[in-house]
Image (cartoon, rainbow, N blue to C red; front, side, top):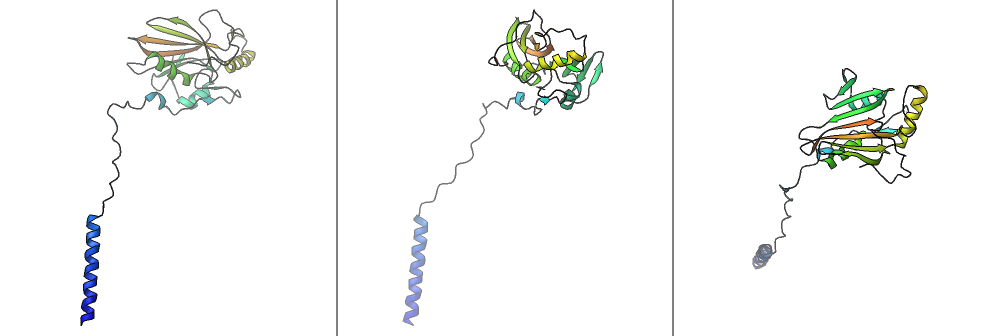
Amino acid sequence: MRKPLLILTGLLMLLGIAVMVHRFSPVPPAPPPPPMPSLEQPPEDPLFLDPIPPAEDMTTRGFQSGGLGLSRAAWEVLRGKPQRVGERFLYRGQTYSVSYQQGLVWQLKCTWKRPGFALGHARTRSRRYLPLDSQHQTTLTSTAEMIIDQYFSPTLAQRLAQTAKTGPHLQLSLEQQGTYTVTHTLEKERVIATLVRIGSDVAPTAPPSSLGNNIK
């Protein structure tokens, strides 16, 4: 009788010690809550949300552009089918207005959603519509209403030289063939439209000798 009583007493003592240890043991800290997004954090810039990459025009190996100089077929792979208005072709409503010459995107106008963009933003955004190897040459015009930048693309020059062989009425000199302009139209210091056009508005300048002057 005494032995079972001792066993029971020992078990009760062990249970009491376990309860005391659990009660006075330090509780590990809870993991910190995930950080709340700051209300001052700017939303993601819609400039970089367009997933469409520049197209490589299979009709001319090595020529890559997001718009200017592409064949109509390559451009419409990127932007879909148009609505024709006179000599212009409108894509995605009136977002893009395109004129073709020799079967190529010769003139491309992008109309930006109001209130438009700051000039630096518009220059960055317009890069997606230019040949990938484009080099900024000079700014031809800079006023409160209009900025005209001149660029040169070696691969565009090669593409147009090949086109000239099959289109004798193409009136461009060798120096002009890779030259084009990007005209930004401003309203209240915001760019509301950008026009990209093959050719130069001034006497042609020699192509840059190096690739150091990347497009803006």
